[in-house]
Structures are given as structure tokens and as C-alpha cells.
View 1 (cartoon, rainbow, N blue to C red):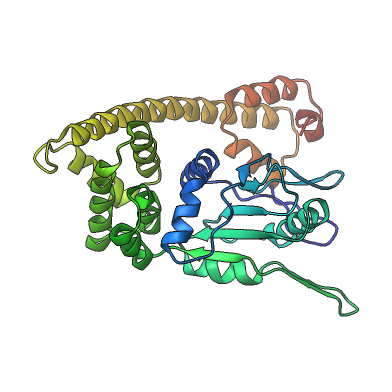
View 2 (cartoon, rainbow, N blue to C red; view 1 turned 60 degrees about the horizontal axis):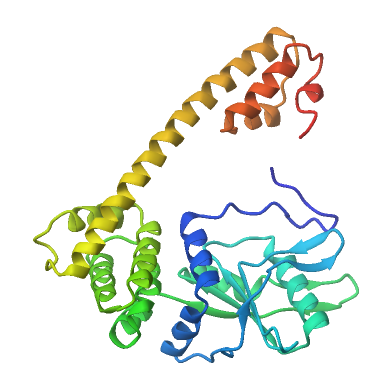
Length: 320
């Protein structure tokens, strides 16, 4: 459902993608990767004293802004960095970025930054201009974040000069693309992981890289990793191949489970629509959409139970 606040600003969040969740979790667990990325790209880096802290930024009850990652120094009020992994434009950020920056300045001091990471030029342009608002009397508030745009050019740079751990960012730069260029970078990224001595870090980064792939690149990686002749059979390469096979098995198991759940939900949705029709209850377009897009069989079963005795639509969706 899309809602608007009193200012007419869209407030419903855009659903996070698997890539967004993967990168956010990775940066929360290992924020030093972001320092390495900034350094490799020749950008200013934040202090090593910054640590991941609770990203809930309380502005005014009941407003709470939760950025992807918030880094702050436990011993110092001022240094802080808000990090947003941005895959697509999101109108909500017009207000939330301004609110988050204002709250952080008020509670910790003025020395802080909003850093936006993206692989999309259109998102980069949007991020630089979205957080602006002007009042009817001419008052203006504007926020210009620091934007890191990762393209295949940056991917080349990271793979050529950066640390091997930065391969995950290089792959993100082309994860949404297809063609020989993207395939070449994918191969280089995977091979770069072999030079990481820390086995745990190597596995974490490989899982993150696999999680962000779909379509053409995911298909190529599967064929490539399943072909023992494609990659020299070193101990580390064998480890990555076994890790990939385990990842695929788990993904297929989850896919089967989701497919069964969706099938059950579609059956429950059809049953609910039949009950509503038989009760002579008028069905709005919004309610029909809500029913047909619901993927929770338990929730649909609760609605069916209410519909059996309901006399109007509001009784069915009483808790919504």
C-alpha cells in the first residue's frame, strides 16, 4: 500500500532487494571494507575509530529513521557516517535523509556525512537532488550527500589496484548487466578471492557475491563453477566450488518451499474471493489486490474465517 503523509510525500518504503540486503549485512559486519573501497577510489575515508551502532535515529515521536548502516565513534560525539545502499530512486528519502541528518547533527554534533552507494547513474543523479524542499514563503532546505557511483570502470580499478576483498564491490558494479564485459569482470572477481588468506572472509565474500547475481551472470557462474576444467583445481578453488554447490542446493530448497507456499496462498485467495462473493459483500479493487497479492496462507485463512460470518468488507480486514 502506498501512503502519503500530511505534506503529500509518499511514505511507503520500496521493498529491499537481495543485493541490497546482502551488501547492507556485509557492511554492518565488516565496515572496514567501506574504508578500503573509499581509499581505492581516492575518496576521503572515515576514522578507524568509527563502529557500527544502532541505526535507529529518533527524530520526534513517532518518527524514526533507520538507515542501512550507521557508523559512529563510541568515545566521540561528532564523527559519524550514515551509509545507504541505493538500488533505485525512493521518494521516501526526500524527508528521511533530511530528518536523519538533522537528528544526528542535533544529538552528536555537526561533523558527519551521508554516504550513498549505487551502481546506477540515474540513481546517482537522483540522490544528489532528492533531499530538497522549499516552503511557500521561500524557505529552502537542501542536502547533498556524498555519492559513490560504481560502474565497470571503477570495477576495473578495484580489481587492478585494490585489495582482493574489494572484488565484492567490483562485482556489484556489473551484477545487473549481461554480456562479455560483465562476464569477464565476474571471472576476475571470483579468481581474486583466491588471494585472500582468511578462509572465513573468503567464504563470506563469495556468498555475498553469489547472492547478488541473477539472470545471465548467475547462469554463467553456475556453468563455470560446475566445470572443474574451467578453474585450476587449487585447494582454494575447490573450496569455492564446494561452497557454491552447497549454496545452490540451499537456494533450490528455499525456492521449492516458496513455490509451495505461493501455491497454497493462491488457493486460499481463490477460496476467500468465493466466500466474499457468496456472502454478497461488495469487493473494492484495493481489497481484491490485497487478497490476490497476499502470500501468507495463514493470514488468508484468518480472513476466510471472518468472511464466513462478515456482513461487510471492514469486518474481514479488521486488523489491517
